[in-house]
Length: 230
Image 1 (cartoon, rainbow, N blue to C red):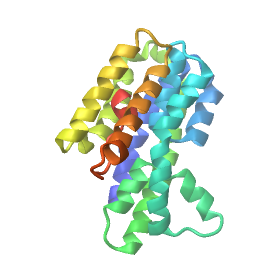
Image 2: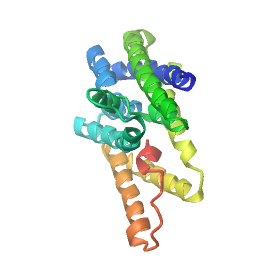
Image 3: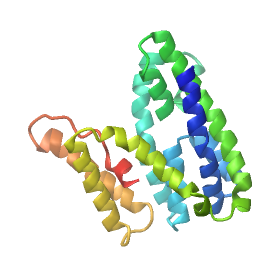
Image 4: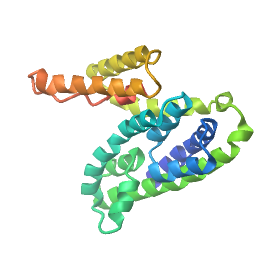
């Protein structure tokens, strides 16, 4: 419970940043609230409003958000085995399967604590994330430019926090560097949101080469260009 609650508070505070940035990007208060309540995956939400604020089309924003949300489906397979939800709880468990609930559950050894960590972190983050999103959206106009307060940097810090632990070997570092370079080179020439899609294709090509084309049967890199590009 301590781990789950601490993760909830730390993550929930990012909701202020999202709420303010979303309103600044042109979304209404209710659109902002709906994104947090229904999409509920911080990385995807920041990617979505980031593409829109840069002038990108809705399809590009949706594509970038979807790529960053794919990891939750991967988490879902392991969390289903750990938590074993039944009935209506399966729907709720799917909705709160995020980085934090996965981390809180996976860090425990006892099955009871695994389930407790999952639910405390998942529900705790959902409640606080949405509360702080409302606060950020309400204060958005009063705050003025979110960059003045460093709120735009909060999203970057969150991405780096997810990416950094994966850079534990030379290969993930190399993949991250290649994807970051691809993203940087394509930003000036492609519409907003498309560079991260291109980087994802590069990541897929590297993974295919390592597992199939490379012929050595080695596993694909654990870090993807969608995270490095973000």
